[in-house]
Structure formats: C-alpha cells, structure tokens
Length: 120
Image 1: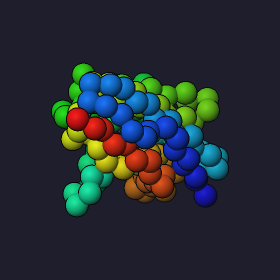
Image 2 (image 1 turned 90 degrees about the vertical axis):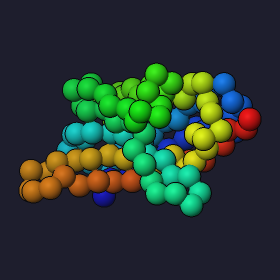
Image 3 (image 1 turned 90 degrees about the horizontal axis):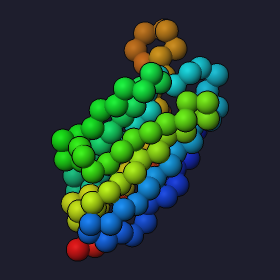
Image 4 (image 1 turned 45 degrees about the horizontal axis):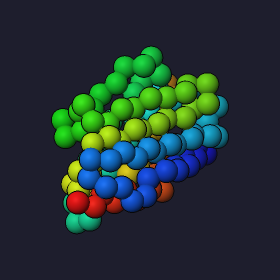
C-alpha cells in the first residue's frame, strides 16, 4: 500500500510564498509521476503541477510562472514552491503519485491534503 504524507502549507499573504512537501512510501515500484492537485471549497479538484521520474514538468496555466515543482526521486519526495500567492490559490492541496505496475492502467494514489489559505 502506497502512502503519501504531505507537509507544509498554512496561511500566506498575497504576493508571498509557501512550500509544500510530499513523501511517498510503501511502493516497491518506481513512481512514474508525482504531482499536486488542489480543491477549493465548492469546486472540483484541479491539476496544479506534475513531474515525471525523468524530470519533465507540467503546470496548470493558472500557476505557470509562479509555482515550481521539484522532486527527489531517490526519496520519492515531491516539493511544490508557491510564489506570488493569490487569494484564489486558497485550497486544499493534495499530493498524487501515479505508478505503472505494467498490469494495465496506472494506479493513482492520493494524500490526505494540506490546507493553503492566502489572505489579501
């Protein structure tokens, strides 16, 4: 069973910065993609950023140029640096790990989520 443990987040001010960290454990397989999603109150969960085990990154347009995703593959840990925060960044941020076991479709695992609140 894969476990994802998030840390970081909290309260930030508009224009400020926060950082998130997520450590994946329990997998005997290499994680293919690590990423972050967020869900604001009353809204659907949306993709924020992702990084492959080869280092390729992808960002949602709403955070491009402001957020940076990075990973330590040896530790199966993914980081998200949030800069130039906006009130609309307020949400619960969930860590995601996708693992391809070679048995068909890849499997997604999710963390419990960590709250990010940005004040104006």
